[in-house]
Length: 280
Image (cartoon, rainbow, N blue to C red; front, side):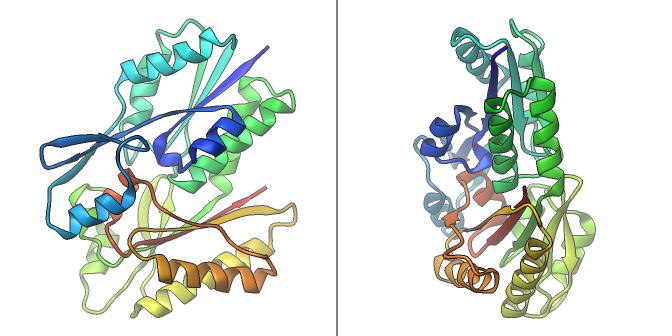
């Protein structure tokens, strides 16, 4: 029985990685003022940073059920018998809802996974599901692998300003209140699909150093190995420093660094640094 894997563009999979893993990516959309763009097709994160810095109106929208229907149909046409569709937290987007609507009309069974996370953690979950399928897993097992991977992941987020997360309602009220306090730079994380404050820290340097310490400590506890990555929006130099510090402490040749996707960038704002750890 053949199983297809589908995810969305917030999973931070490059086109090369998606093709190698056999994963179909359904893109979200971004509107900048009156213009609509498709993530991963005609919009990059640096364009989002520039638009936000220029004070333009930036909003995002989930894929339509039709977009998912078309993606599922392409997989069915390729000969699959089941589909696992793996997506960012339903607390952050209606993407899961669109996927479920399309799944109800698909010609083959579709298991929709709400990862309760976002970004690299969701992408790692999709990758693990694809790996499980190559090893002979059915859709039920592949979905379980994705859920377990996402649940075990750590996402640490530093933002220069909570304003962008507050605008979209994608940060807890408590975290927003902490962030409004004078000279506080909260270190954020994800808790059951919601962005929350992990620790209150006074400076950017201390917040990033604390993120490094937490990730290194948790990576060292991963006896079966792990995946790790650093992402940023308009903060490449500092992100490279964080990646280098983590790599040195863990004895790695390097830790990958990349920009966040355009959709995530629209909600976190310029200056953001995210560090993600996913145990194997």
